[in-house]
Image (cartoon, rainbow, N blue to C red):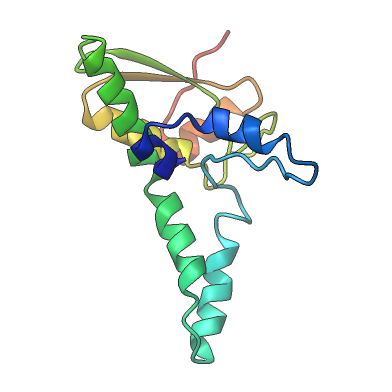
Length: 148
């Protein structure tokens, strides 16, 4: 998705075209968080390095994902500026706090990276997620989700 964006190509268009191939697997780009996939590569990396192997691909994938929150916010801010929307003081509603859709689990959610980055721009950020426990969100991240 990052490469397509730099080339001015819509990732959705690429995925639709790729989907015409009979054996295409519909993986979609996105944030990788949670209690396993976002963390387990570091355990494997630690073990690999202990035996003298440096797993460059695993580490590159984690580095890329660890910076996606900032990338998403940068793209949003650029879009707002292009549309002449004032960034400072803007009200932003994030739909979803858990690490994946339709899930109450907020462990290691990468949405926090987006919230943090948006606050750096002095935006007013609200988060809505009907699946999560608001008390847990407040305790873990200091976020009070808006209620419907």
